[in-house]
Length: 116
Length: 115
Image (tube, rainbow over all chains, first blue to last red; front, side, top):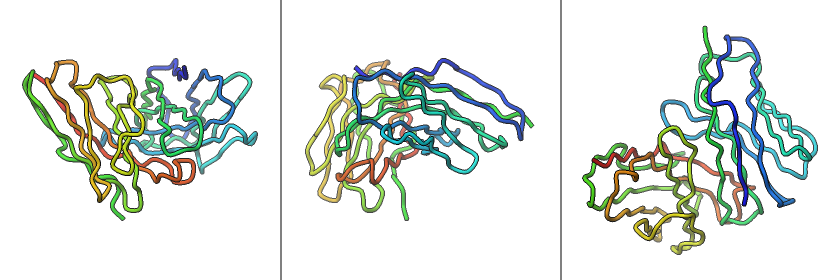
């Protein structure tokens, strides 16, 4: 069975600083995808960044980047130049295969608070 | 371009009652998944529909059922409500060619409270 673990229930960072959120996963699959989703108080799950397991290069989206360590099954999210609008719940998620029936498996989330 | 639309936004029901939640997928998407998010937890997969059929199901009892209509919209039905069914129910849509290409788009959810 596939599992996703987020060991940091809550984190806090000062505005403009950098923060890293941790995620580990367990799978025997070789073809899979990893995601970070943000859930603000509006409740809508918003995709932050995605990583395909066969790609060795770490994904980057503006201020957001990942550190993907396939052998260690680790997928951390780094947020640079943190902004007040980054305050939200962040979920790490895993999906394997490529068909339409693939479900997302989520971790329990990390609540990030950006302090002014 | 409208995203995923869910209704209602909030709902209060009594134990034993039945509830129906609705979802309209993003334009161009034909596949709908439903997730249950209990307070303080990550979303848990309930089931997925495309071509009006349930294609995959998570570890949820038969009290949870669904339907997809020809216009790709979907309903989630829960019978014999329990207090433990209180949660945020999220709908996510994608295209059948795969979320790898099209990604998942989530709605803002329906907050169900069972009293």
